[in-house]
Length: 263
Image (cartoon, rainbow, N blue to C red; front, side, top):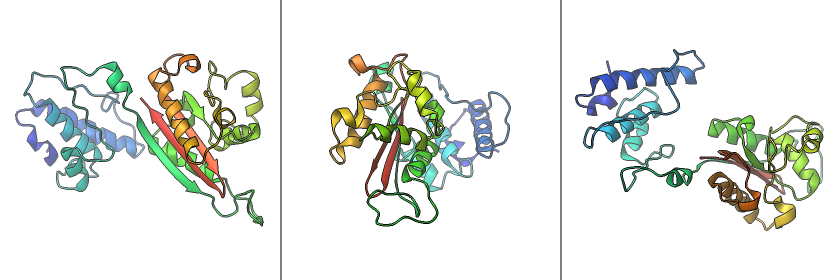
């Protein structure tokens, strides 16, 4: 029996069967279970003439995916998705018959996380040290940002990290999970952190080139990342059309904020 949220798809029995199976598969994937190939994919295309209910089917499908019960039709997740107000579901309605590449690249999905330092974390302004060393707030902020975005450090095409001095960039690369401790030297020597390298770091020169006005540094990082993802960074442009970016800031007395952006 189909979930109640699909009741609005009148005369679309075949579509309901397909979408219902995908919802079940998606829930299984979240639980870490194996699913048949093709039962749930990263993108879906709804086709049909005007008035055929494409947008209705798409919204119902999105609601079922957000719903803990697979599309009950009555919970907050279902209601907000169907109403177009769900925080995690973006509805794009083109003015014409198609959506241009520029329009789609302008839509940047964000994960943003702020963390303060846990007990035992070193802070330069602290008058004392804990007997047992705790992790930096950067570790928690970066980890949470990647989890929120559903992506990993190895999926980033470019990154921005706090670099108020050269050593800070090197330290934060490892704390953000972008490399193992001690691997930074080889990465730099091989040119992997340069604009044309495997993982471009601070493509606009970072804080060392732009200064560090409080608050504006994080905005500058996001702005540079958006330029890169749109292919508008000019001479600084990372090649091969980057699609993902990560930003990180750190400040006294032990605060770190990280974002993940993607087209």
